Length: 128
Image 1: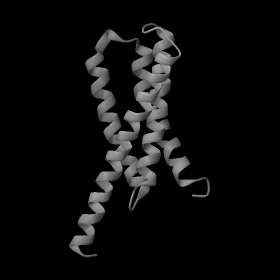
Image 2: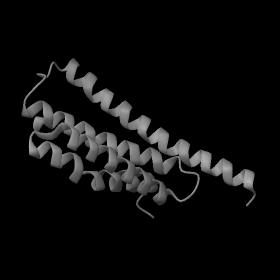
Image 3: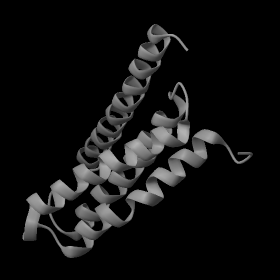
Image 4: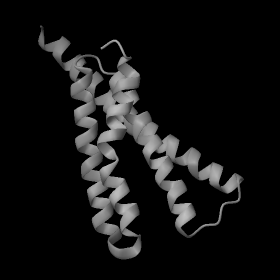
C-alpha cells in the first residue's frame, strides 16, 4: 500500500469517528427538541430518565455511523469510538460530581458497551 493510500485511509478513518460524534450530537439535540415539544418539565427523575434514553440512543447511532463509514476494520472503529466515548463520559461524570443521582451517572457509564455493541450489530448486520 502506498503512502498516499495509507494517508487517505487514515483521513477517512478520522472522518468516520468525527461523523460518529456528529451523530451523537444530532441525536441528543433531537431528544432535547422533542422534550421541549412534549413540554417535559426541566428537572427531576423523569426528565433525567428521558435524557439518559437519548444518550443511549445517540451512542447507538454514533457507533452505527462509525462502523458504517469506516474505510477498513469496522470493529476497530467501534472500539475507538467506545474508548473516546468512555473518556468523555468519565470526564462528564467526574465533572458532574454529586449534582446528578448515582443511577444517572452509572447509566452513562454502564450502558456504553451495550450502546456500541448494538450500533455495531446493526451496522454489520446479523450475518457477521
